[in-house]
Length: 277
Image (cartoon, rainbow, N blue to C red; front, side, top):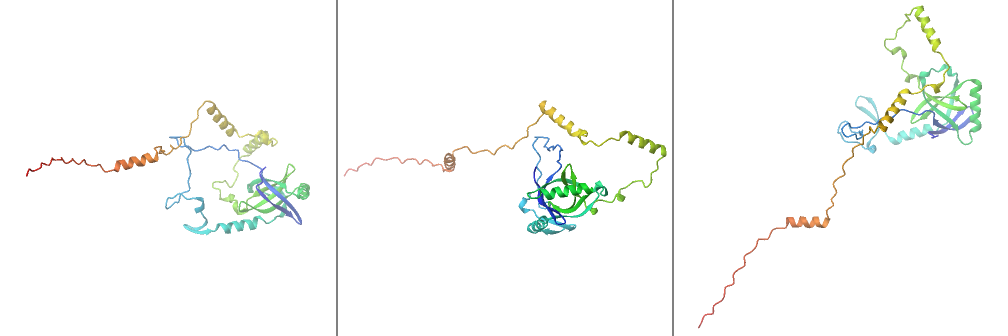
């Protein structure tokens, strides 16, 4: 399993060297966009919005737009130094709380935690302590240049880190439009709804739920492939190669530009007649 972060977690004087591994993966089917005319993939290039030039990666800088059209350019070295200074710090658990106190809206992404060399005993200690107290640890961590709140909990005998949103990143529910302030329902309607919920209530078994759209899409793709309903992307025609011998081409050029000689008529020789004395 790929390691995406290395560091340490501490609570009190206990320090646990750990590695983070992504606990989930995106199973979405990636569809390419093609040019309908020739079925070649569409390229998305970085182009300057003013001069229209294509911009190379080395010519791109990061900046913060503090007002419309005004930017503070941030130096790459400064950003890298700031990131390293924070990433190299040990992640300290600052609080222990009940997970029931955290609304699921705060949850963002899950990571499996594995102990690094020398951290197995401390890892086991934290796992057992969390199980016994039925609590989770709250910490701060920097992942991909972003400081995040995270909670540490036990999942199937493995410690899991869940990154969670800061309070100011969760929008206020009161700002949602058209939400009724009162429940204007009759008792009969409510009783019927509760009865329906009771009838549909079951134990949560995640394996019984599947992505039906993804399955159907894969089946559609495979049936088209088997039926030979495929296309081949057009390719650029290679530039015409000069297969003419270089010396022959040079000689032909010289011959073409060589001035034509005009024939000069020969002078007729006239016999000399000796004069008699």
